[in-house]
Amino acid sequence: MTTRTDAPTRREQILKEAARLFAERGFHGVGVDEIGAAVGISGPGLYRHFPGKDAMLAELLVGISERLLAGGRLRVTEDARSGDGSPEALLDALIEGHIDFALDDRPLITLHDRELDRLRDSDRKRVRQLQRQYVELWVEVVSALYPLLPESEARATVHAVFGLLNSTPHLGRPGALPGRTATAALLHRLARGAFAAAGGSSSVSASPSGD
Image (cartoon, rainbow, N blue to C red; front, top):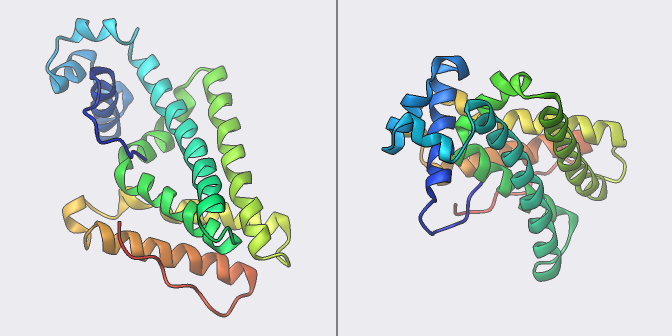
């Protein structure tokens, strides 16, 4: 989930290519030399930035969990201050942010599913802690929008929506999708539909237009 417009640093370039290669070929199927070649430096040169592949994997998975949580909190705060601040608007903001991640960082979804258990215990626990906080951020908003929905069901629905939104690695290559705007709008409608179904609502708000 990236909103920066400046050029990525060499460290960020390494992480991006490492994520792509790990997702395509698996953690053990990629060598340091190949990651280096992808960013135009020698394999040993990578050690000026990372002590090894394990450190890259940890930074990728811990980093995306940190960014999702921070981004979710920021969207909720900004919408509460500058938007109408309604639970519906806050939920839309959270959905939009997660869709940005799901469309822009698809290799990280694959990487998380396949390689999370390779992290050392402290890093894996950190990822799980951040993910729980991210889920609870959503649950608070969903519970405010659907006050009759039991908290356990709100939490289960949030997890189900994450599964829906995180299905993007299985939707084919970017060129096979109907376009980013259309795909984002579809995912948004599906997510709102899931929450509406769980909350017993007979109406689903139209998804916002644009990227």
